[in-house]
Image 1 (cartoon, one colour):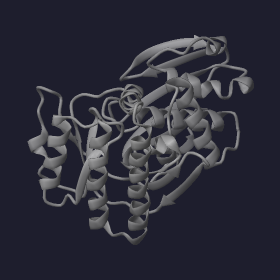
Image 2 (cartoon, rainbow, N blue to C red):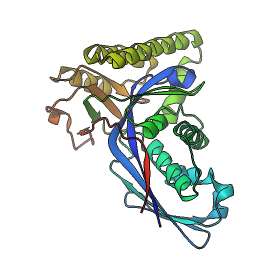
Image 3 (spheres, rainbow, N blue to C red):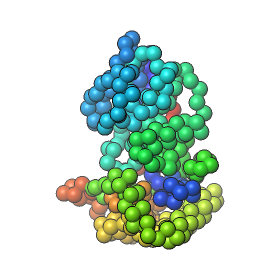
Image 4 (spheres, one colour):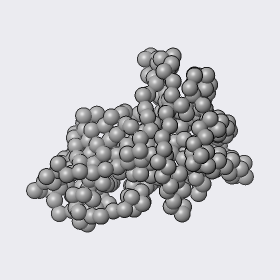
Length: 316
């Protein structure tokens, strides 16, 4: 018997950086998914296979060693249950999307792995506890992480999130999106470090910017409840200005955001995530995204939709 868990990727709508400092975020699950299948073994080996990332193997004792890329999130998730593990397992990973696109691949594979392991070991875990577990894994690997993308992968839909005290509110509504990958990315931890260095001499300014971003999120949450999408688009535009002030914009990202805003059907646009590359997101759907495709630099539109389906697991 095997245990197959599927978790969605995610995109940040509002709240970047501020959510790392006790503020709120608005994040959504998207229809690109990570599927993790665990098959128990009769020995202590842990064998991992991914068509995108290759193969690797270790054993139960290896979980106590430094966890190396590219499977460090998976092994760290497995390690959360180390005291319960008596045997090893085969782990198969199937992904709908590249880990370079900024769609929360690390969060999705972490959540899927945790869900599959819990099912294998017959451990009942609430959705909120799954968020705590996933956030712990991400912080162990990266050293920093709000957990907003974890919450979206767990709950699905549009999610209002706060890290401390942990609070998650799922909105069972979806709205079309338009997303463009810039062709390059800056690792999240590096982007956070750059912002921290930039504002080290200006802590009061940074606090004010985070407060402004939090106000965007709080306003956005109310607009989602009322389903006032045009106004939500305006709030995305407003927070983009604050992202620019944080220093995570670039000439290319700025051009992509402006380009998205010009498209018919797009109500507002901004950088999604930590910035300095990755994705820009537009609220609303447009069929005129071919203008963003540039194979030479790897830039392209990403067909993506919000999804209400969070993580789920089945026995196969």
